[in-house]
Length: 258
Image (cartoon, rainbow, N blue to C red; front, side):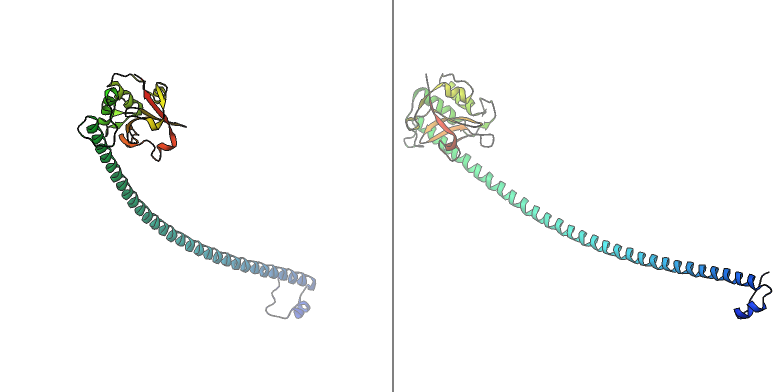
């Protein structure tokens, strides 16, 4: 039968119980239930404490992560700003450099045109001191006059006039004006001309440059200068036969036979 203590001491309850053995068994079971409830309560409290600690740790980590993100965002913005500033400075420098190079190129074109005009005047006998060009006549004069008249024209690969030339196209077409046929290729023109020392070069002789992938030819006009179709950027112009770049690849002088 069920038994309620009503606050009576446990020893007295045993004495008053109808069945002390049954009472002790019930008391033991109640103690086990109480102990289990107490243990469960402690586990629940511990779990809640650990959960609160975990939530706090997660919150701290999230705060740290937000701080890192903010710092990284600020650093990226600063880097982007500095990059933009550097690009603006570079663009300004490039623009200034392009203007400087354009001015130099224009000055060189004017100098080439002036030298070409002086040489043509001398060759035609209209000046006795123009350009330092040795006297020349006959077919060579016709070839040189034609080549000088093309100064300022464009360079186009495989072109041979009337307003654009490559290197061998200019020399071929110039000598064609004098009735001499040359092949349209620098190596072929090398093989079609007679070797002479540079010290004996005369206007109309061809000057050759070979080495690696370089194969180039120009026409000697005297005073250590040549007229030639230089490259797509410069077109037909006058340069020193042994200028800084040309000296490296200079291969020899060829005199046109005929």
